[in-house]
Image 1 (tube, helix red, strand yellow):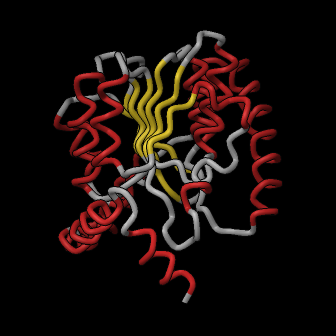
Image 2 (spheres, one colour):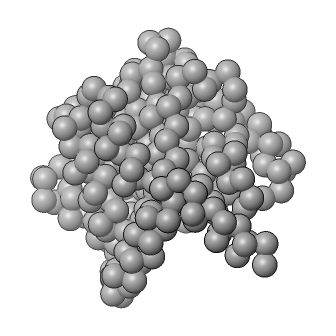
Image 3 (cartoon, rainbow, N blue to C red):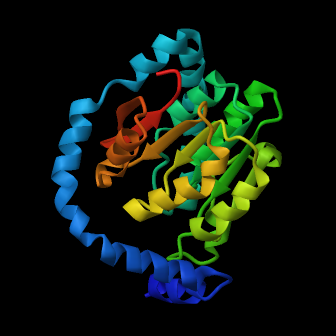
Length: 256
């Protein structure tokens, strides 16, 4: 009952009602795509390879650093979430995000989908290690089933990392146009928000002016539909697919 009350209450805050209605409409519209999931999973599974081997092939020393850093990130995040005792969801393949942020010496990173902040913590930790004043721009939409959900976004992110963090919480439709006006070329873009085909396409189209030939793009949960397959085939992009905790991520990069 509390969850229903919180959802109703939070839906009418700021720009929330419009975003909520848009999400409901998209889910209804794309129900027919659920029939493809078996085929999508089969495609992902056939293409998948080890992200550990991939990282080692680029820089084995850096991968060792990544493992040590992510072990610490997990330990500290687990402590914070245990005290909170709420389900804020997982965090995508944060070791790959840490590794690539370091490998690219990234200065501008954009991500969609923050939740507890696993990926944000990994990226910000790597940016700090880069020592190049790199910035992370994050787009999210709070979990409305909880009271004061805005305070839960990025819950595990360390306070001393937030000076380089620009967090937007009005949903991708409102956040991404604003973010696109604040960034130059995006070195790394990580998508982990609205899993619909249209949601993914909207993000790419909105950030297209900032995504250059040398930008690295990562999509989480590509097993949900054929968007990633269509995207790389349409643009003739080299790509990698990795399995992480039972799900798949897709990566495109100029150095593949």
